[in-house]
Length: 455
Image (cartoon, rainbow, N blue to C red; front, side, top):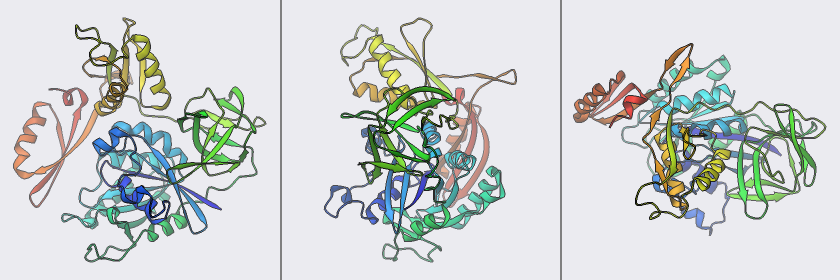
C-alpha cells in the first residue's frame, strides 16, 4: 500500500481545520450515524481551541483513498505556536498551502511556507474561500508566486500545482469556476488525485534497519507514555527490541510493547508497522521530542528538530498576595515546577528556568498568546499562580544587542485608517505597505516587540 504524508499549513483562520473536516467526512472515515458527521472543527478537540476558534496543537489523522493511505497533519496557523509546526513538519513529505482568496498571503503564510521549503516538501497551493464577496483569486496567486520567488532556494520549488476551493462546502476545483454558488457541483477528488500524483510515496526502504524520529509525545491511561513520529526506514513488530539514541549516544534499550497507527480520530493497535507510516509507540518510559528510536544493530540518530528562539518571557510563581488560596488548590513552588517540567516535554517553543530568587520560574515563549494559553490551562487544572508583566528577550547578534521585531498586518475600514496610523506612530512602527480595495484598507507595519507591548 502506498503512503503519503501531508501537512496542511496556512495563516490563522484561512480554513485548514475546516478542510480537514471535509476530508474526513468525504472519505467516509466516520459512519453516517456517527456524531462527527454533524460536527465542525472536528480536529480542534481541546477546550481552548473550540472556545478561541483556533488550532493550538498540531494533530494527525489519516484517510484511505483508492489504493493508498494519506496521513494528514493539521498544524496551527498562529505564529505563537510555530514550535508545533516545526516539530511536526518533518513527518510530512508534502504540504497543502492554504491561502484565503480575499486576504491573500499574510505573515504566518510566509513563515510556514519558509519552513516547508526548507524541509524540501512538495507544495500544493489551494486558493480557499473563493465564494467570498471580496475574493480576488488571480491577484492572490500573483502574490503567492512572488512569495515563492522570495523564499525558494531551488528552482524545483517553483513548480507547484494550484487548486481552488471552498473548504466549508468540501469542494476543490482544478480551474477557477466562473461563478461559484452552493449548487456548483464538486467534491474533494481533485485534491486527493493531486496528492497521489504530486506527493512522493514514502512507503520505501522497508528492508533497512528500523529508524524513527520522535516528533511528539502523548499519554495513554493504560499504556503510559506514547512517542509519535514517522518511520524513516525499516519495519517494527510488537515486542521487538529497540534503542533510544540522542546524537549518537544510546540512552537505553526497550521493548515495543504496543504499536498504533492512526485512522480518523482513532489510534488502531497493530502487530507490525512499516516505513513511511506515522505511528504511536508504547514501551519507552524516558524520552524527549527530537530523539531517535532505532534498531539496536544500527544505533544512528536522525537530525534533531530545531525551533525558533522565544521572544517574550514572564515570571511564574506561587501566589504571595493576601488573597492566596482562594482561586486554586495547587500553588506551591514544587507543584508549579512539576507542571512546567511536564509542559516542557511536549511544548518545544517554551524555555523554562528557575529565577534568581529560587522560588519562581522564568518562562519564555514565542508571544503573548503562547504564554497565555499555558497560564489558562494551568488555571483550569486548579493551579493558583502569580504572573509578572511580559518582558522582551534581547540577544546578541554579531556583538550587538538586538531586540525582536514583528511584522503586523491590519485590515480595516478606511474610516479607521487615521486612528491606526496614529497608534502605530506613537509606538514608532514603520509602515511597509498599504493596499486599498473598495472601502477597506490593509496596512503592514514593522514594529519592535517592546513597543508592541506598550499599554
